[in-house]
Image 1: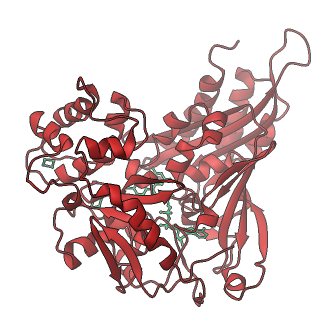
Image 2 (image 1 turned 60 degrees about the vertical axis):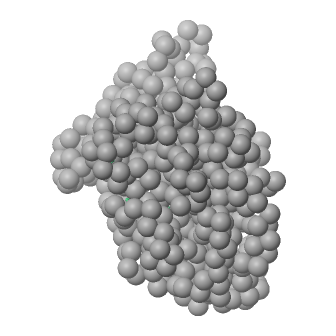
Image 3 (image 1 turned 90 degrees about the vertical axis):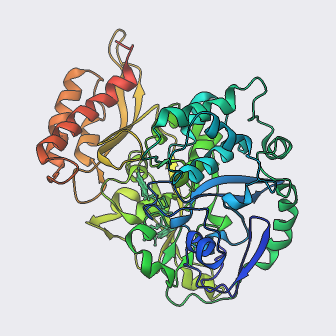
Length: 487
Ligand SMILES: Cc1cc2nc3c(=O)[nH]c(=O)nc-3n(C[C@H](O)[C@H](O)[C@H](O)COP(=O)(O)OP(=O)(O)OC[C@H]3O[C@@H](n4cnc5c(N)ncnc54)[C@H](O)[C@@H]3O)c2cc1C
Ligand code: FES
Ligand code: FES
């Protein structure tokens, strides 16, 4: 296990077309670095909490033979996470001659901007849509701006601009990726040189010898920078986000293993996950927004221990286990001690974990021993909101013992969030379901048991009785969703 060390002597990256080398505190956000250290004021400051998208930038990273770009909210991104990457602000997209790019033109032609405060963020998200590998459908064009909020123009004109990028007789977007985007002047020609510049930058950036005196861990920063923005600037946190040992998804015949720093978008793009979870896109679209999904790691979600963490609910229902490791051994050149623990045993109380401070999650593992999986979430608004209540279920259903009977549940794992101080694995409900026929009586009796396991409180996301109702309805919805059309 390679840890890159908490004290970078230098952080090096490419900002637009300029190579940056800085010894500023590594927790300074990319937003502040661009605006206050490089006087690039095009990127706007809105909420500073990842919600509004005014600060959206492109982040390019070497990936095999290619360079891939994703959007991120620069207000939550420390410069440490820019190390070795291409950071693109609006100044790096604008044409030198002052002409508009095709994305900017589409927004102007469709009256997609009024005060203009949000516009840069929309331009960045739509530019990324033009150069990334997602299918160039109308749905995906609109989805690309799911992390951008506009307070004055009205979304229909912005949506029209997004759709225009797909609908032109000669589309501005294609699977051709970066080369196509350069040819169409969606991004400037200097983008063609970035890959080789990053290759030259890469070997010089890490400092594997450094010690890790006070391990606290930073991954995507989407929780830490919302909760402790000032403190994080000077925090001596170990950066796990770019540790390639923690960014993998593999499968064997029986199980799937995932590195702790895999982000939600990696799951969306994983063939292994697409195969196992037919509704992957529908479900993960309910988790935050495109830029946040590009930053939000699984381990970050688990360790943040929010009772409504979506990925925590998801992996509890897969009966996943996590592997923990101690960085001190790694820094000393020793083989690290590792131990495994079931995710359902990880939560001891509100934000209390069965983990020593110096331990960090290295991987997540779950068995592919299920035939059905479903995820449900209710929030105050459908997208870019945290749950009032969420729940997931995995089931292994087997054919009936007697001809003409009903399918039987051989295995079941159910989770629920927002109904307890911890992300909850519903032990009694899961246990009850095993061996039962899938019918209305089973669902109704299981629902009674579920109500005894939860202890919701009234808060801004709903009253206790409303959350109990939601838990009942969403549990029932699992079965409607999974077995609709079956007798
Ligand atoms: C606008 C916005 C919308 C959001 N919407 C949702 C949503 O819909 N659903 C949802 O569930 N969450 C949501 N979140 C919360 C957040 O994005 C997730 O919890 C995310 O998965 C956190 O991961 P991270 O990598 O950013 O964690 P970080 O902020 O980097 O870290 C979070 C915690 O995990 C620890 N940590 C990180 N990696 C490790 C590791 N490998 N081992 C040990 N400790 C580690 C850190 O020390 C820290 O305590 C949202 C956040 C924002 C800003
Ligand atoms: S300033 Fe609102 S998302 Fe960054
Ligand atoms: S144009 Fe004013 S906020 Fe979007």
